Image 1 (tube, rainbow, N blue to C red):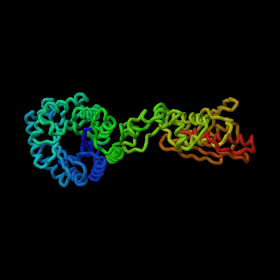
Image 2: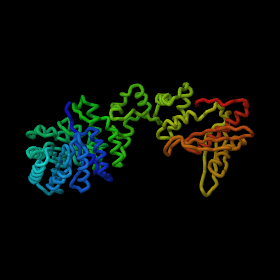
Image 3: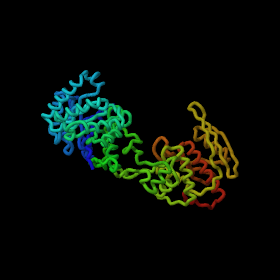
Image 4: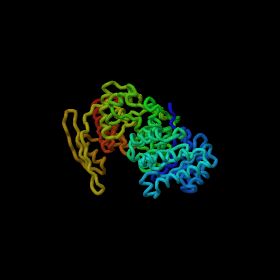
Length: 514
């Protein structure tokens, strides 16, 4: 298998993401984790940019022992000298020179002709070569540079002493066919091309950074440059974890591999996200929160039967423990039953069906249903109590300058629908007064408590009430993402239990599920 070198520029190009500013301690912390990940080369910064960046690059250079540490430099002697200073003490230093070559950059930014660009780059490479064994040169905006001129630039860089020539798609303009063809052409037309390594540095402006990097590998690239989580200028860089896992997953197709410690990917991603303050999108490939999460009932059923039906990568491969079967409105009965077993509940088919119906009702109101939600659903009805009254609808009108009122509709076991409206000192009081009127039961509220079962704005609320009628008391419990509905359900549950106790004085409550 051909080895693909990994050049990480999280600390340089990644830090150029808008709003990201890493201090020296944070850069060193990320660098040491990148070393654990096993990157071959890491670009620590741009020393000429500021004294602080120079000091940070030097701190990384002194801390890292098992990877090449690189400093970025324009094709100017003062920049090269700054890199020399920054990389003092590095175990394996390298300088990365760049100079724009595309027509648009030559005309508007550099105001130089082709010959002047060649001369400036040649001079810079030769100067850097006096102090560095490893010199990488990048023709900036190579993707929009004339292909014949790019061949000239590469030939010049080889003769001047560069060890790596990097081909950047600086603005993410190319497609995989175009970018791959550049490497194919350089391999075929540039003399002594075998003396150097060819590198690919892609940006993601059109969403093709990873595809372009893989196309480069297929056409002879030896090194891929990118960042963790794909952070970087504008839309970001190639996400290194995507390239690494593509090669690891499809060795049959690419015939190449990295030497990264893939199990460190998840940890590295989390650290970079934390220190840069850039959250990883949930749908991000490889490291997103949903990358190994399955909610669709069809997918969950397949996963439970054979994981490879819907997972081409094992979460363990990148350092995660397991896949997640996220229970939501798209989940099926199979996944729900497996979750019940996982939580320790062994239910009969009828009870599973009842629980699943309640789960579906809750899932329509919540983005995701967690374990605590399910436990609460299963334990909502602790007593086998005939439901004399069931809640159909509830409508509450509230304003801080008006008296709250509530309209409640209940259905009796005989099918009679009763609807009553009542006022109260608050919304809950109004609901309870309306229920009293609809049920025609004279009860006294002895206790009312409320708590959150799960987390988040859409958390399940659990209401617990104790009602008294004459000398008999009964508890009621209600669950809902709407606390007013939970209050109504708890109250009506207690009313039903009081009626049941009145009809069966000797009855004892029996614990059951659903």
